[in-house]
Length: 215
Image 1 (tube, rainbow, N blue to C red):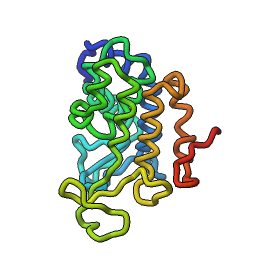
Image 2 (tube, one colour):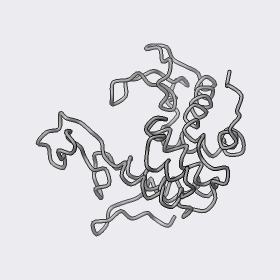
Image 3 (spheres, rainbow, N blue to C red):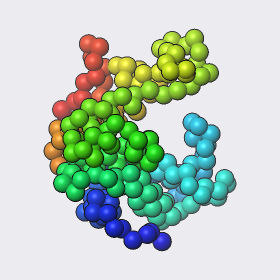
């Protein structure tokens, strides 16, 4: 059972913004539902058992779950990740709250809460917070030493997902671009931002830059 919602920002996430928050997370994470109508546990890229929409909590290897169980997981997981937003001012716009929820869902509560992005949001600066999301552009894999595009940064081999047209992790950067533009208010309302997800998914490289199609 979900715990009582007390913080007003979290109440918005779980109330008026839940539909767009859930839609955004599912767009990015998928449903995990297979052709047999069930979600099956799988090992993610970090070898962590995962199910449904990227949920890693209480996953039992070999135990499939129904769409209804996945929906329950999604609601619980969004509420858990929304705890990272507890310090945001009540005046934070809905579009910035939506971007913050998706960011927290992707990087985790601790990563979000300790980030410059959230510190700026808590200070009432969504524009600055949006720009700070751009620093979350690397993936790490020390087995890639010597591979093209992988650089030794802060003691690890990392790949810059913002590299235009890359085939390694462009999906992460497309998600970041959406989060940045949503948080900065460039896409309009939270509902408008959700509707723009597919455009960012179709972003392509041209002239050494990422281009986001108009439609």
